[in-house]
Amino acid sequence: METKFRKIGILTSGGDAPGMNCVIKSVTCAAIDKGVEVVGIIGGYSGLINDKIRPLTKNDVAGIVSHGGTFLYSDRCDEFKTEAGMQKAIATCKKHNIDGIVAIGGDGTFRGATDLSIRGIPCIGVTGTIDNDITASDITVGYDTAMNSVLTMGDALRDTCESHARCNVIEVMGRNAGYIAIETGLALGAIGVAVQEIPFDKESLFKRMNEARADGRRSFIVVVAEGLGAAFSEGLVKEIEERTGIETRFVRPAHIVRGGIPTLVDRNLALKSGYKAVELLLKGVSDVVICSRHDQIVPIEIKFALILDRMYKNKLKEDDLEGFTDKQLAEMKAICKERHDYFVDMYEVINGVNR
Ligand code: ADP
Image 1 (cartoon, rainbow, N blue to C red):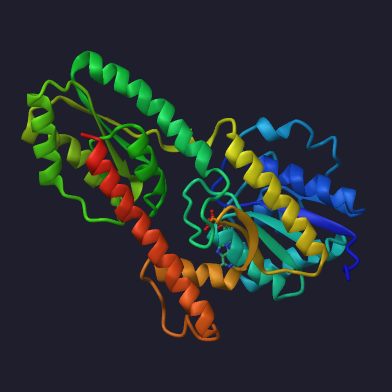
Image 2 (tube, rainbow, N blue to C red):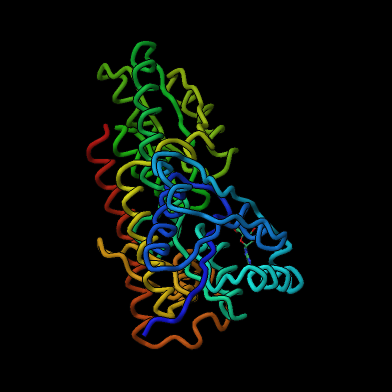
């Protein structure tokens, strides 16, 4: 039995990611197709607080799938975290007859979606973060494009490193997650990949570089995850030079990899997730995030997803696990193990192949 929805709002919030526009397109078209009006909320939750609302038609979203960024703009809004800000947002929803919201972003955005859901505005989250740091979802919208952007830049660096017999250390985004680093490190043939998830053995890196240089190898790429901090990555450049004598340069592509044309993987993940979000919202489901698990598009309770993130990062607070069934807890532990094992396996392959 479908709930009668008059209007759905869409917003993009937090750090932007390529593919967010594809979610907007998908939600807009799917909802209009089901006879529901759609409005765009401009600038994330601040647009909701400040009544920045625009109607969206299928024509408005035609052709945006190939554009990076988000045409609804994004923002970080601290006022939304306060009860007063939340009430302003709810008043805007009431004023415009917004009966439900699809919120595209990362964990912060989903926290906001829960806060609105429990106050009577049903929300569904869709991932939009290059960091791939939503543990409940195997991949997130934006991640694939960001990895491919790093790959393109890394390949270009490899060319010039080869010409000049240099090493290049590349620090890649990912906040506290090393996914972009580990995947691009393998694909780029990096001789070293440093991430927070696995202890990094500098001595082994210097040894392998010295051996490879003695063997005639000219170029070297080392990938470092942003989460280790600027002091680590910039320091590593100096240490490599000192310990190997190989001229070493540093690159931080930073936000360049947050933009650009979304890849097929990101577009289709976004389009499928947006479609699923509308289908579920209209069925009366809320307070879930649309995830990709083993190639299936599935809803996962936001509370489950957020606590799972904390479990994975070893940051559980007292009482966090209260209210979950034994089956859910076992599932959380299994996902954490799956993720950890993945890093261990990737390290083994990188060490075995990229010499
Ligand atoms: P991301 O969604 O990429 O993780 P942020 O953590 O910056 O990005 O969160 C985006 C926005 O979501 C914040 O600016 C704020 O408006 C909202 N938000 C974040 N945390 C909460 C919270 N605990 N309660 C309500 N809203 C939140």
